[in-house]
Length: 178
Image (cartoon, rainbow, N blue to C red; front, side, top):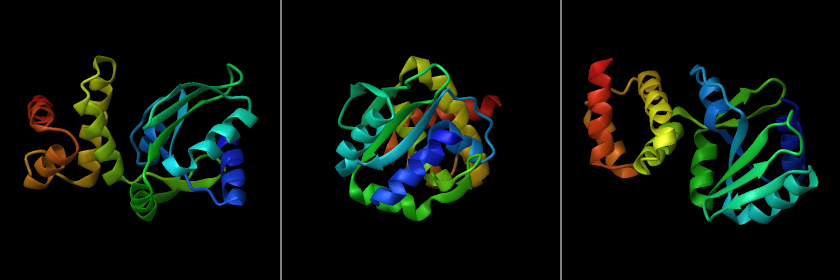
């Protein structure tokens, strides 16, 4: 993936860290997911660096919150890039647990199954209708990979930490239907 090669080279040169998340990270763990963008986790303190870098590549920032930056690619053939902004502690933990994965050229830090689980649970908490089915399916695949029974105390605790009891109960019902 050429854009990831460019990102990796520039971020390495400037001493900035990133982690591949989203659909490309799911693919790295054997979960087949088509995606039309590249999602990266970066430190919130490096926000200006990433905005300037994306701009220098011709990307246009079209939405920015305290947690996310979404950008539009300079051409229809390019990947859009979305950034998830996290604090230094979260970034450090995620980097420590990340796997190194070859995304068609560069070998870069890619989110661990545990961190993808946490992100999916957090996304499900928001209950966004356009994401729920996709995120629930991804989550069920991730807990299989992790070997974590949905009815386990450990999984229930994860749901309560990153989502809520409603999300946990939906997952239990959905898992029983499969």
